[in-house]
Length: 347
Image 1 (cartoon, helix red, strand yellow):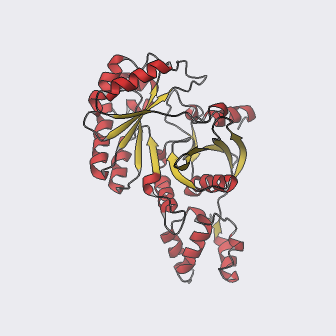
Image 2 (spheres, one colour):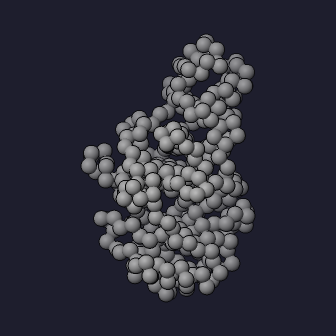
Image 3 (tube, one colour):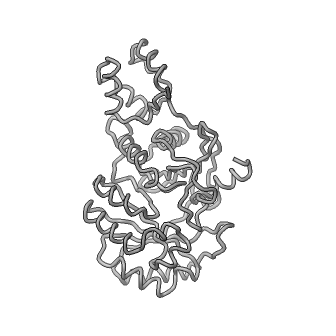
């Protein structure tokens, strides 16, 4: 029988386990706090639990662990990039960025990705598997321990598509937010998706005050299909309708990620159509200058052109910023570092 992954359990699930073992439910709170507030993994060292309970737990539970495989620190802005080694020898990555308001971490939700966006390095080797809640949580806990910091903001925008790992992602959010655990505010969590429309409706029904971020990258269906295969399944009209529903349901502002590609999606017709489809929506556009990869033979727009796009879009009364680039000297963009290492070592 497979052992239970205890650091992927919610507090309610831990309480059920304790009751089934004939223990008081407060034992679950002791375990939960030990793992998720104090970031410990050795249950045998949790001396608040009676030794006989610790011995019983050894037979039925396991603690999912990850290790720091490599760490890179930017000389430009102190951004830290982590490659984590999983128990099955797969590699994932996270990025810790320091801002005036505190530390943000961008974490992975899958090993690889099956979405196939042409400009993204994360997807070039396809989806290997989903991450468990514990593997998502451990990216935060290990980075905090290593840097001796407290993370204040979380972005689910590393390798993988969070809505393609829906249940584990929701469990992760529940655990990281719990007041008896790490107690990170839901308002400080951003979930980025390429646009799995049915799951956007599902997420709206959860009514969580997180920030939803949509990878849009083109306002035209045919152009979007060329760079994002998900567009062959869900049209832009369907995606925008789902976003409007989400915004109305949650009363939260949606962010649209828009990677600027020279002469592909930065033309006047793109700007006009983007303004049209987002008109009246409570939203924000995050312009992202393209980070070129070998497999995508397109160019990054000039700084002057990027500013032109921003200036023209502001005319539609839409909130818009140009993403500040972090860790440029350590391949801090999504998937770049992991891909270079896995290719080098034949993982």
